[in-house]
Each structure stands twice: as C-alpha cells, then as structure tokens.
Length: 479
Ligand code: NAD
Image (cartoon, rainbow, N blue to C red; front, side, top):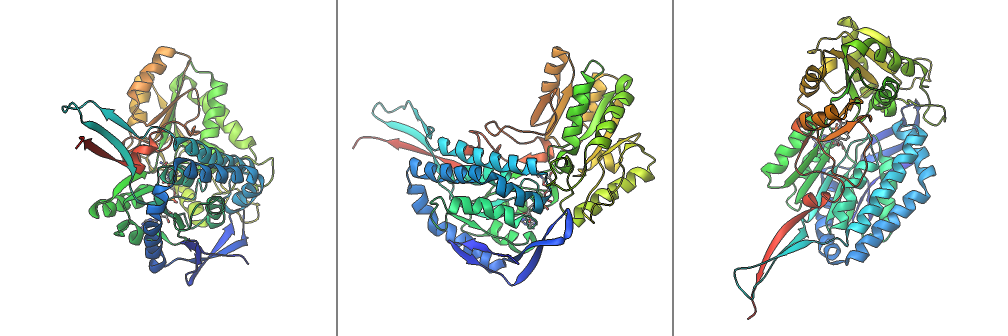
C-alpha cells in the first residue's frame, strides 16, 4: 500500500492519522493511504515557506520561469500516465483527466513567460529630477487551498503565478485527491524549485486550515471551494490581516431562446450539465428555455442524457464517470429525492446508476416542472442534474437567470446578435458565453464570478498578478 505524506522544506512529513484514498468507480479498491498532517506540520510548512521566500524572490525571472517551464514539460510528457491515476482517484474520464493534466502544463508554461512581463510604471513627477515609479513585489508567503474537482488545473493556476512573481507557497490540496496533487508537487520539486518554496500539506481542512490561514508568517490566502468553508476562511484571513481571494460556488444558467440552433444548444447544455458528472463550479444547472421550445429542448437533452455512457472512467466509451465520494453521492441523491417529492417531471435519469460495481454513479438527469424556490433550482448540486425552467421571452429569462445569489458563469443560445449583446450587459456573471456551454475556460483570460461566487481579484491570465503582488511606490531624487 502506498503511503502519502506532506512535504515541508523538501522533507516528507507524516502525521499519525490515516485516511484511505479510494477509487470512486470501485470503492473497494484502495489506491493509497495518506498520513494526514496535524497542526504542527502545517505550522512548520508556513515557517519553511517564510525561510525560503527571500532566496526565491531574489531569483532572476529566467530562473523562476525555467523551473515552471520544466515542470510544465514534465506534466506534458507524463500526461497519459498521470491522467490514468487521476481518473482512478477523482473519477473524471480518462480524456478529461489527461486533458486537465495538459491544461496544468499549459498554465505552467504560460506563467513561465509572465516572469518577463513589465512589473511597474514610471510616472512624471512634480520634482524635475525625481525618478518616480511604482513596482510590484511578491506578497510573501501564500497559502493555496484547493478543491478536489480540478485537482491539477486549479492548483496550477494559483501556484504557478504565485511562484512566477516570487512568492513562496504552502499548498493544502483537497483530502480526496492526494495522489494527483503530488504529481504537480513532484513536477515542480523535480524541476529545480528550491526546497521550502512550495510545501504541500496533506491534511484535513478542519485540522490544518485555521493554522495555515492565521499563521503569522502567511501574507495571503487564495481559496477555491464551497461558499460555506470559503466565507470562514475569508473571515479568519481578514481578521488576521491577510489578503484573501475566494472562488466559490455557482448555479449557472443557460438560456435558450426560440430562435436558437436547438441541436447546438442541446449538445452544449448536456456537456455543461453532465461532463465531469456535473462536478464543476461552472456546470450548467439551470436551463431557462423560451416556452415554445421548452419541451423540445428538454427532449433533446434527455436523449443525450440517456445515450451518453455512464461507467468506469478508464473505459474510452465513458462520457460520465462517478461522483467523487460517498458523501457527494448522498448529497446529490438527496436533491433527487427533493425533486421526486416535489413531483418534478423526470425527462431522463433521476437516480443512482446501478450495476456498476458499487461506484458512486448517478444517471445524467433532466428535470422540469419545479418551483423557482425549490432547493433543486436554488442550491449548487454538484452532480449531473439539469433543472429546466420555462420563460416567456428574453426579459423573463434574464430575470430568472439573475435570480440567484451566485454569479459565476452564464450562457445564452440565440441567433440574434442584438439580444446576445444585451445579454452580455444584463447578466450578472463573471464569465458570459454565447452559443457555448457555461463550462470550459481558457487559461489566459481573467476568471472569477460576481455576487457570492467570488471575492477578491480575478484569477488566471495576466490579472493573476494583482493578487500575488503588491505595489511599492518609489520617489528617488539625486543627492
Ligand atoms: P470545500 O469547501 O469542502 O473544500 C475546499 C478546500 O477547503 C479543501 O481543500 C478542504 O480541505 C478545505 N477546507 C475544508 N475546511 C476548511 C477549513 N475549516 N479551513 C480551511 N480550509 C478548509 O469544497 P470542495 O467540496 O472540495 O469543492 C467543491 C466546491 O468548490 C463547490 O462549491 C464548487 O463550486 C467550488 N469550486 C469553485 C470553483 C471556482 O473557481 N469558483 C472551482 C472549483 C470548485
């Protein structure tokens, strides 16, 4: 049995509590055991990062960039092998897992290039001989807390810019994905990153979270996960004077108007709702359809839901793998119970996918006839469940789409350019798509949500620099 440990200052650090890492497609298959970090290991990680920070911030842009580039090369080279382990651990299909590994490589390569971007501005000054400039400096020690649903891409888009701009990092991955997480850590550690510049703490959030977020050596906390945990992390971070960045949940709408290409809309809605078994913060979970085409679109999406193969992620025919854990399965089935109790019309799915070796599989599900106040319509479900709602025209559709505390992504399907442009202005979401699914991001543009979906500056692309650096303004006169 493989035993997995945290790594602090380049040294393996094992805690005494053990957690089993299982294959969600076949829960009797134990992949590894994690020797979970305790509070003292977490505190040591913050101290190790602080000790390594001054050396790393002094490294040249090309030294920092070279480490990131080599780590990206390793991930790219080993994507097939890493993707297999990732699919077995997290439950994404092999194609999705290999694709995400390649995405992480591309993110590392992108930020390798960012180390050479300008880092400040020179200003005219009131003093005729004054050199007045402002430049960005690393914030110091960054804590990155990440979820299980994108175990490589999300950590990469936090850790790569943090390192590129000269910070040291303590990374706390989600407990469910230690094997996959260690691939990213190893790629960096084996590419010349000095010990202590990146430390990985494999521990329970409830045990190590507060220690990291409040540690005096920590300067900033970047968090992606649920709203409930994220709000507490934000409060703790702010109370202790740390910078905080949060990427939280979504309840993302796709609006389909009668003048849309319905075949395209059905395919994109199904992709957004069912791929990765719906476990994406950007997943499509509300499908708001102009009444005249509501039943036809529901029938088209239901047809895809019934025909897309649910099964082992390693089977190349599989489009929908298992949910990540028994807790996630229970939670999604709980929402399906609510739908049944509220007499929803079930166009496809509606329950557990049985006969698949006890794995945590749920049928891709298409529901309609739910009240707008139903928990199924309001809560983030994080499973392959699409709730259809009819609307009388564009205005009502946008009002329904905006009727949520979340504001991460949103899509509109229409052939009318004017309506599409109005939508881009009127929808309250950080990412807006027209004739594309709500999920699926490119890594070189800002990402984040409005309202309760995010807080702090945006992630990804050039703007990631905002969070991982702070300004210093210099007034310099000749003697
Ligand atoms: P989660 O909030 O349960 O856990 C996220 C991370 O926080 C994990 O590493 C966890 O161990 C840690 N954590 C738990 N308790 C903590 C504490 N007290 N202090 C500090 N850290 C703690 O979320 P999850 O179930 O891993 O992920 C699913 C959620 O993530 C969904 O709500 C999803 O929408 C959200 N998500 C958001 C985005 C985005 O970019 N907006 C992307 C992916 C996932």
